[in-house]
Every structure is written in C-alpha cells, then in structure tokens.
Length: 236
Ligand SMILES: Nc1ncnc2c1ncn2[C@@H]1O[C@H](COP(=O)(O)OP(=O)(O)OP(=O)(O)O)[C@@H](O)[C@H]1O
Ligand SMILES: [Mg+2]
Image (cartoon, rainbow, N blue to C red; front, side):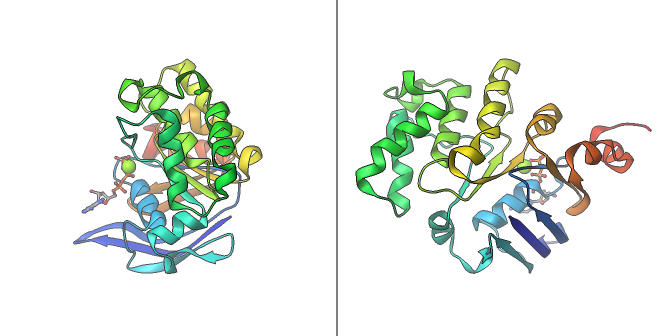
C-alpha cells in the first residue's frame, strides 16, 4: 500500500507535481494522464531519481523518501523504464540474475529464483539468448522478470505495453495480473493503452498538469467526465 502526501516537484518554473495526495491500495494500480502530466516524474520520485520539494510517501509503512535509491531497491522497489534496460551481450538468464547482485538474497536459491521468474514471463525458450537478439516483446518481458526477483514489494512499470501487438499485450496483461499471487508485490502501471489499464488495474490515479484529476475504481474513473475531457479527448 502506498500513501502519498502533499507531494510537489518543481523543475525551474515547471511544477511537474503539485501538492499530490493519493492512497493506492489495490494489487495493480493504474497511473494515467496526458503527456507531461507528471506520471514519469512520480515514478522518478519513488525510485529516488528526483527529489521532491515537499511531501512524504509511505510504502507498507516505510517512509520511502528517507531511503537512498540503493536502499529502495533492497527494500523491494523495482522499476522499468520507457526504454528497456536490457544488457545486450548478456543472455536473458544473466540479465535477470544480475538484479540479485543488488539485493540481499540466499545465494543457494538464486538459480531457482531466476528460473521461476523466467518461466513466469514465458521466456524459458530464450533463457540463453543474448539481449541483443531479443525482439521488443521479449525485452519487455525480461524487464518484468527482472522486477520479480529478490523479494520485490512495489513494481513500477512505465509504459510496458507501448508498441506491443494485441496478442503480446494480452500476454503482458496476464503476467501483470498474476504478480500479486506470484510474489506478493503491488504494481503501479503507467500506460496510454486504456484497454490494458481497464483490464489489469482495479484502481486508477489520473494526473493532469501535476495534479490529481481523479482516483478510484478504474471503471468509475474512466467514466468521469473530467477525465474523459482531459485525457480521452471526449467532447461530452
Ligand atoms: N528533468 C526535467 N527537467 C525539466 N522539466 C522536466 C523534467 N522531467 C520532466 N519535466 C517536465 O515535467 C512535466 C511532467 O513530465 P513527465 O515526464 O513526468 O510527464 P509524463 O506524464 O510522464 O508524460 P508522458 O506521457 O509524455 O510520458 C512536463 O512538463 C515535463 O516537461
Ligand atoms: Mg512519461
């Protein structure tokens, strides 16, 4: 569970987030909003790349902003980037195993844990294939597998569905939906694909110009006239 209080981020004259309050307590939460709304900025604050001007974020009762980025990884925070971070000359197995270098783990179980994550995302058949030879979908699933090892607690995915075919997106959807059962972690999903949000996230936060436009059950939020006007481009 994540509680955000009075979070403000300023870049020069731009207020990327403005006194944001939100409680996200569902297993898979959506984060949507128009371009420049502040979505990636929020993920950057959570992972420690950006320092907020004001505010506090508690994750499962821990004051996240007091931790260094490395401590946050150890705490169980994982993120993916809008461009995938896959090491080209390491195979899939080694890409996932490398995450465990940064977190406390039981070395005897490392291989079993990596195998379980690779199996979960459906990449067993390319486990020994180098990153450079993977297609976009496989690279995205490597990012998901990397997020699943080392006792994760909160997973932040920034547009994992961008550019995927419908079939690939449905595979991603199933993977996202099962994460809570797989490892107990909460997921925060940013995506412009409203169908993906609708079918995976039971709770959604909508940002607009750095402010909270709506927060609640995804169906209600997507039907909100203010959200439809700002984000979905509806006239009514
Ligand atoms: N490092 C930075 N320096 C200056 N301004 C920034 C920086 N990062 C973001 N911004 C500005 O902050 C605002 C929010 O940007 P952010 O990247 O969080 O939006 P977003 O919701 O992720 O958009 P998109 O859907 O396009 O990915 C924008 O006005 C952006 O130009
Ligand atoms: Mg973004």
